[in-house]
Length: 391
Ligand code: PLP
Image: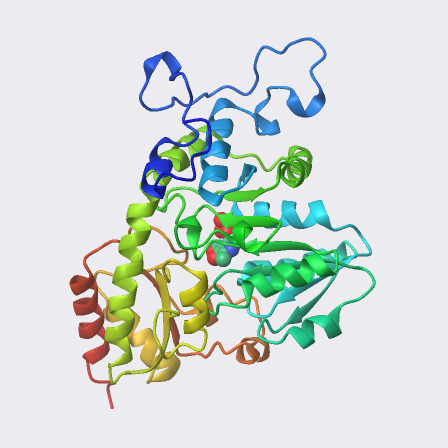
C-alpha cells in the first residue's frame, strides 16, 4: 500500500501503510537492515548517499511512509528521540537572532530546551497563554519566526485553540510547530488543522511498548527535507533495530489508543468521585476547562490524566507506595500503567515558583494509563487511596 489511501480506516493504514512493495524476499515482516553503508551509484548527492546516519535505510524509508500516512503528511522523518525531533525541527526553522512564541506549560524537557539551550544559541523565547490571543499579538517581535505548542499539555491536559494558533502563525509568517505526542495520530492530526510541522516522542504511543526511545517530525516535503538535512548533520539517526520495533509497534497503535481512551475516561470518572481526590484533570471530563474544545478538536481524549491528592505531597507519595498494579516510572503511552508526581519528575527542572505558576502542585499525581483492565486499575487505585492516613 504505497499510495496514501485516506479513505481506508486508520486500523488498516497502521498495519499496511508504508510496508515495502514488493515484500523483501516475500517476508511478511520487513527485516532489519543491519548495515551502516550500501553500494552507492556514481555521483550520488551527499544527502542521498545510502548511509545509516543519513536516515535513508530501508527501515527508515518504510517507517517514514507509515508515519506520513498516519499524520496525513507529505513526508516524515524518524529521529533518535523525541527531544532530537524537537531540537532538530526548531533549529530547522530558527537561526541565531530569532525569537519564538511558545505555549506556557510545555513538557519540562522542552521548557528547559527553550529557556536554557536555545538562548545560548542566540534564540529567544516568550511563553504565552494559549487561551489569550491578545497575549500572542503583544509578544510578537520583528524577529519572531515560530510558534511552538502541544496538542494536549502534560500534565494538566490543556487543549488550546489549535486552529487559532495555526491561523495566527500563517498571518504573521511564523512556522507553526506542534508536539502531538499526547494525542497521537489516532486522536488528532494537527497538519489538517493548519500546522506546518507535527512532532512526536515516538517513545510513547507510537511505539507503545516502553522498549525504545525515538522521535518523529512530519509535514510538507520541503520542510521535512530541511529537517532531514539538519538531522544528517547532527547525527541523531535512529538505529535500524529500533526502526523495526517502532514499525511493529505502530501496527497496533489504533487498537491500543482506543483502549487507552476508554479506560482513562472511566478512571477519570472514578477518581472524580473519590473523597481522597481534590481535583481531576482530564479533557474528557465535563469539569475540565477545555472539555468543549477538546470534543471539537480530538477524536479521543488520550491515555493520560492527572489528579490532586487531597493529602498533598505526603498523601500522594503514600498512595503511590501502596499501588500494586501501577508502576512508578516516567514516560507514557505504553501498555503498562505508570504513575509519577510531576513536581519530582517531568517538571523537576522548573523552580517551585515556575511550577506554581503553571498549576503543578506538590500533591499532583500523573497517571499514564496502559491497556490493562479498567476495573483492575480502578481497584488498585481504590485500595491505594482508601488506606487511612496515619495520625
Ligand atoms: N514531548 C512530550 C510531550 C513528552 O512527554 C516527552 C517525553 O516525555 C518528549 C517530548 C521527549 O521525548 P523523548 O523522551 O522521546 O526524547
